[in-house]
Image (cartoon, rainbow, N blue to C red; front, top):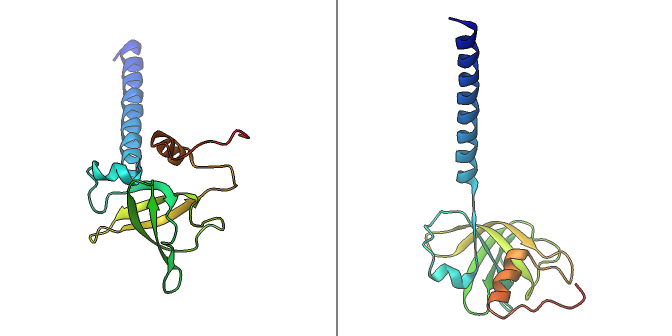
Length: 147
């Protein structure tokens, strides 16, 4: 093998290794992707039970029910539709009715969204970008002029 052939084989082997590493990385990231939906969008979306998604909107007033231990049931709404959510764990301190929230989890076989994480807004002016954009598109959320 000449020097030129050795050099080319090393370069090709390096490129093959980098290609395989990039392919595995994209595959792994694709498996962890969770898509964002508002409650009204779920009516037209094809979400399989067990598929991880993010559900965002406002915590519907009068729907927060605390169960046994750290289990909480509530509804997330975009004022058009609402989705029942159950969550077991410690809720963020600022979680309350009428506030923006993003939940991450999957639908159970009974059609109730089972969240494994709940993110709430962190001050009186902040609304998660995905939730704010979805509510703005429906004409529900109006940004304050102080922002």
